[in-house]
Image (tube, rainbow over all chains, first blue to last red):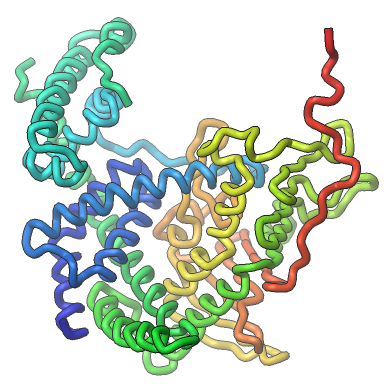
Length: 182
Length: 312
């Protein structure tokens, strides 16, 4: 591939899937700056491995799977950094991240799901991936992804409806039983 | 409530529908541009130590050329040939400095508010050893550093005075973020190139000023989110952090705010200072003794952590 062809392919890749990866990294990291950092890293890897990238929609799945690994590495790095920050930073707090702005009940319901349930559910509902595509992203059999998605949908629905119909305090004990393992 | 209502609510909460999503994609495009350009620059300056290395370097040149084409199409600040030259020079300085800082170095970090020192630290590293301390005027009897890692042993200041052994790495849970290796990894991430490349790779509107002693000052702006990219937590609140763990106050807390950046490069091609300023605040990192900082010494009379605990 010539430099011009590489540039065109990379441009097309970001143009087609950049927003998807921004959205995915956004809800996986919960922080705009970490999401931005992860997106940059994902596309740097894509740039380096442009010749190996699958064509068409396969590239999108490859990007999601790469983003998932990048975020896992980023989380390890953030744990280290926070420990260091706690030692070094002795300043008063002046800035705080505001609320993310999406519906509070949905967010509360999502927070009460286990991380696996939340991930497969949002890959399906927000990213529009099929169970087979989810399986490719998270590295499991399609039948496993389908089962996880089914359970995640059921759990989300129960939690969400409980939050809407009654107070959060009343639901707390009952919902604890629905959590899946981390 | 029907099943479809709960899932409609979930779909409406898709982050793509949020007001800030478009700007987030634009910011990500900018970050991609900076990262690809910095990586390409780093590859082009790799030394040609062997026949194989020559091949890598040639590949790097072609990748860099393609990267420039790509990043321009993703959105890049304009500029003539002089700006392109300054851009290349400041990025090269970032790479050279990161390479010089690989083995050892000293970084003096300071944040000023309305002309007075808000906080300051001195960080020295040499191989696996590390010293972190305040860089503020000392009181009589006060130790020079507050945290040391020497030969895999961690030392801290005893509240009753003097030094205290905090323990060997084996006494700390792996992955907790508090082992010496993890401290060093976090510091190296800041001083060992990633921070430098991110800042120098994203400078826009570059101007150059020749200083005395063969030094050059490169001035430009960088989005706050690229300088203070991390989120930490303090007293239950999320905070945005500069390199070396300083809280981004005021306008710097907004990741899209353009902050004024001055990178001073010495005649040796190494960055000596990065200064970031915004209304009423200045944040500086001064690098010195890169590759020539001596290793910190273990305190002579450090007491074990468990000494003084009453026994039954």
